[in-house]
Image 1 (cartoon, rainbow, N blue to C red):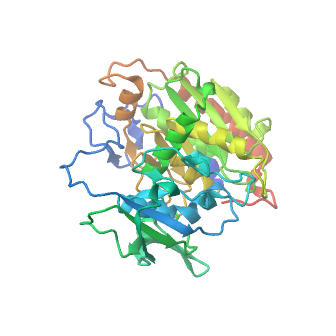
Image 2: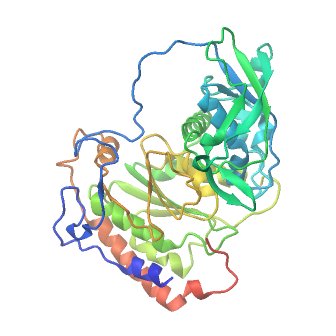
Image 3: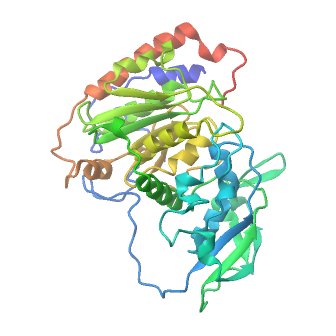
Length: 428
């Protein structure tokens, strides 16, 4: 933890000359990476879809899970158990056949969350190339398919208690969908209880479906007001009170704002989301930042659905953020990140199992929340601000200055409280 203290107490020298990317020149040890391959100052998103030559249109195919996995966990654990079927749908360009039983959660009192992705017993919501109801495929010819998992090293994140935790690329079925099919086909298979811990091939489906379901339900996120830059800090602390230390988020903000001076107090808002206590002295440091709001609550465990409304609210604000900062604490944060609207960025630290690898708009931080490369977010600023070039946009150091003051306040609390020496807390 001494490293954590040192990391949080480092100060970016704002008086130092800036490099061409807007990063203090003292940061010369970091490799410079242009993740977007765009010209400096120009608009291009890492989620930009590249055009390809038109393909022959085949009759549709569908995948259906006849027997969903047992799930006694929360939202993140549920996705780990269910995401294999989404990965198959994406791999073979088939539509997922809604099975509401697949979306049951067994912990954290969130009940069935299928409505969040357009899958309920009342019907489906979303793009019919992505999801259909079971009634839609009643007359479609079906094939029983064997679920196949590739256990080679390139498809396994790690082995836990002798069981592989697999990436979303590991799944296939036999027989595979016929590439020369002349009629619609339905492929039925069953869960084999392995966890899928990575969202590389599924995040586009989850993003699209969450957005479609939220918009269909006309759910509003009015706390953002008119903010151009909607910054969400998601804390996963409910049953892990030692997780997600605040210094990681402060460091992430510091490094981000050092290269995005066009994010100002006037055009931004910060919402802190999670099972936490904002009235504690730890979070007093955030009072230094303008326009901070909290969506906080107590941890709720067990069965039932009395926390479903809060989960829906929290995910709505995570989804509609365009800057999302995460710092560990179980599988929920990485699952929630898949719902973020097109055009946003995710900054994440302490991420297990390569959970967000393959999401082009997700940028890994080190364990203390610091950039590992010299990132440039010109494309992001251009698209968010609706301008053709980031050059000439008004800038301000006010928000970065406020973060530096918050870090000083946090360090005062940290030195006095010594939170890492407390006993009986679970930590990542």
